[in-house]
Figure 1: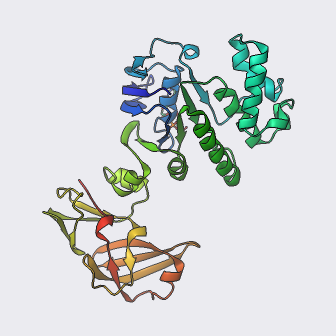
Figure 2: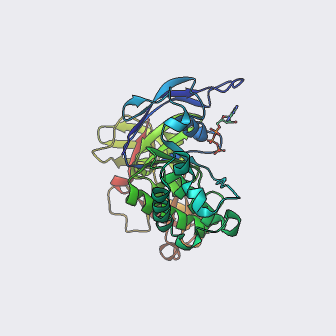
Length: 346
Ligand SMILES: Nc1ncnc2c1ncn2[C@@H]1O[C@H](COP(=O)(O)OP(=O)(O)OP(=O)(O)O)[C@@H](O)[C@H]1O
């Protein structure tokens, strides 16, 4: 299991006014499944291509097990990339596609056959080794692409939006398959996605890239509950931001005075709390509670969004439809912000 480090990695394409990737440093633990998450054109694919050796960085370093790989060509890095367009060889069978890399390494035929058989089993295509790629569905072709990459036992498997062409059900199935392949083989994996649910569901750690810079690198729980700044918070769906002032252990703002959890810094000027953590309609004798007007109510199927107003401050809460149902638009409701749900931004 190989750990991979990016050290101040920067890529400026010719003619660009600012680098596509700017000073990115992160350590990927050996055997982990990590997500590079960010919106379109933020530099995710550029990072993968630099790790694979397909693009030279403008500056910075890439290390596999603490050794720089910058001087190694792609075929000597043992970093294999899987793209969303799986690019299988159309004239070869599924089995030949999967075994292709080992054949290029001149491994004995019987070893290749055994490894191909094992990979077919792992990606659940046991009966399809003799078919041609055009006799497979999109999801099955993507399984072949994964098997073809993993058979090489790469030091790191790089996945560039591998499932974005698949429909929602198939996508979920492929995510589960990737998870089980990861558990079975223990390969270090880095996958690019713009879908935060996919990143949260699959990876142990997420690197959020915005405009070419690494904004926060942490577990999903930390990114949701303790975002580093407002941009990170917004990317992860935070909607409520209330300006104010911190004192020792509390925050004063137009909604009132709120006692902060001990772990929260008392220095920032923006209070945030996630819509799904707000308690609306309780009996309001708890600390960190106040009254607000229920300005709007929108049923979204599995959740209801409440728009709440106190003075000039508007904020949103997400409730289960059953709990939201008796609350009347225009009425005054009690609101409780549980202490552990409060977070202060700089
Ligand atoms: N070969 C290139 N020459 C010049 N600019 C490029 C080149 N490849 C990418 N870019 C630019 O670099 C920026 C980052 O591109 P990149 O493909 O890394 O983003 P991304 O986050 O992977 O995007 P997406 O999710 O849309 O694939 C974009 O502005 C893109 O236009």
